[in-house]
Length: 244
Image (cartoon, rainbow, N blue to C red):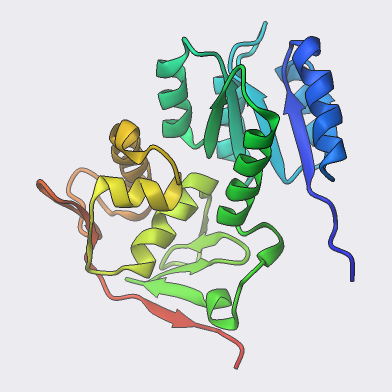
């Protein structure tokens, strides 16, 4: 059975970059839809759901950071930022709000393809390498996380929306319960590159996740801070529902 091609949405206002890049990615086997600004990207997303979004940060009108925030809050879509060299602060903000990676213009298209495939592997697109145990639900302190549907359910059975970045961070904790995970290790798990440059991003992601699962995020009981060490999930975790 032939695997379906990966669908990309490329959002960039520079036609001189966007169009040749779209042609190159198409030759690599991707299905590429183009949008010249955030408004057209939003319209495209109403009709088609891509597997990944390539998003320029600096665009006229609504910028890439605003659109990324919308994608993180409303959809489970991996995002790679296309950024200029002088946008270091924006890159960090982008990672903090949930983007998966970035490349700096001008970039080598082959590097971008490698980044796309790496992000898709981390996001488990296509399920390559998954096992039956990987499909099992996580249960912790009354909560349940379905890794296939990326659905988080609280102890009362209410579904709690969770972003792609929050899902990866929570999964890292659930795979290593009661272990101290330092910032570098967490960022390597959820971002996969240059973790030491973005340790502040972990703190922000942990804060957002705590607001989702803690009774009092200011006095966290589940995700505990280990001073000088990192963070630890302080409860037991079970895997249930796997097919034998």
